[in-house]
Length: 126
Image (cartoon, rainbow, N blue to C red):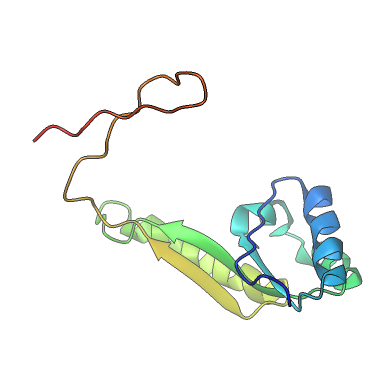
């Protein structure tokens, strides 16, 4: 049985299509990808939809992140959500997976330069 946690996202369409053929051969029944993987085809989705169909692995949906907790960006985010939701349908998918970016209560740790194979972190200031 295929591992349902396998996640693939590619910016190069040919690599994505090759991965879809491989996933089909492994027994997967559909795929989800970040919207950026298909964004170049939003204006004319029919050829991409046909290429996806040839791989025998239908699109389940597209994933995106949105700053829903930022009033300054909310209108722009809503427009992008609507655009990507239309693209999901245009590509033959059914779902839009949406991740929100909630503001953090604590500051992120700052990364220091890599030392060998390690990434070092500093502690956040109190």
